[in-house]
Length: 104
Length: 193
Image (tube, rainbow over all chains, first blue to last red; front, side, top):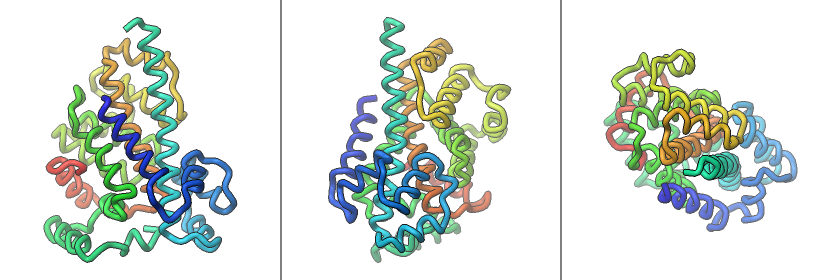
């Protein structure tokens, strides 16, 4: 489904490289779940690995640290798209390997 | 929702649209819809293309199968809003609520086709464990699933591994059964555009 891969790449390119209220460096760090300053890192890490554990206090703490809601919106989106992308790309690579091994 | 901008940060035109949707459906506008309207150029517009393609684009999987995959991935992620939304949509697409309930209760005993069961197992492993290997994929191929079907299922999985996270992070309101059924009718009629 080449069209799906293209649509996925367009989404990734938009959230990482297009205009935004958070810096491109922060958006990329959130996407990659790389180390950010606290309390932002805690929130981004939960989005990637434990989203059901996110609380009102997590969001409030990031606001208190100085980020505005639009920046939080963008960074949370990047974290979600980033984690789902790692899983998607890992699975596509496994698919390519399986098909290659199977001689298809 | 946890961000005030997602509750009230919309243009007058979008607010009118929300009022129309609420009037027509007699239900509050779902938070999933609000999310894709907020600064749509950033996330909503490119994500709608992904989701529409995955859920309604050409595929050997039926709409019901793909909605079931969405519900199943959401169940694995324990995302309450998305479980409700896509359980209702899958049940509507299949005209068979019992089939959906059976899969979400116990995949191994549910009365479904083996290729679909093998594919759902794969999606559960990817969603819960974050990775797959060639053996995982090989088991799905051995169950009679084509490469294209696997790729199509992985696209559904991507869409809902993203959406589930956002639903939980932003704390989507979880409506009752009537709300989910209203949303399901909309998704089956209009898709994700």
